[in-house]
Length: 179
Image 1 (cartoon, helix red, strand yellow):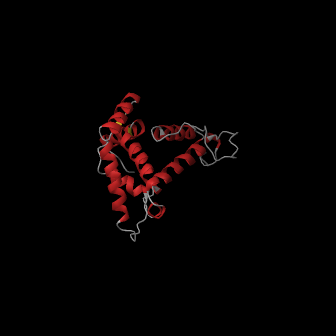
Image 2 (spheres, rainbow, N blue to C red; image 1 turned 90 degrees about the vertical axis):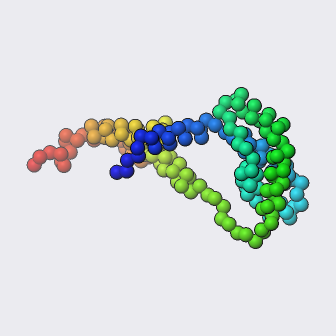
Image 3 (cartoon, rainbow, N blue to C red; image 1 turned 180 degrees about the vertical axis):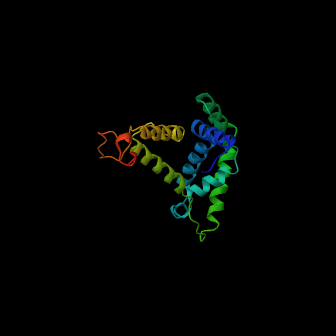
């Protein structure tokens, strides 16, 4: 069994909460600018220029504008549209040129296989445990309660199509009886 210290668990909870409740306004502004500049590019240039690489290039050269509320979003949006507008335009333009410089480069794109696999596993657990409310935040509690219920003979989980109409009775099970 692997034990994560309290600080690590707390940090990951805080990180998930932050990720869930905040957004970087600059990402939206850069994507909009990339779309706008791509429309002005010759078709051949646009075809051989990866917008994701341009976005990453520009974002790495611009300040982040995180917001955690609607009011914060509006402030950051206004700041990005007014104070940082020229920097955004320049960073995207430079990104387009930088990405075009090496057309023979072939790199595999980032994929989030682990994240996708984790979400798929959570979805399968929702079905198995018959808990639509299951999330990463309550996973330990739900699994612990399900195991305790099962230990007490109350089976509340199963694959779709399983007949869970009869409750497992530990006391009557042959492996439990002394013989």
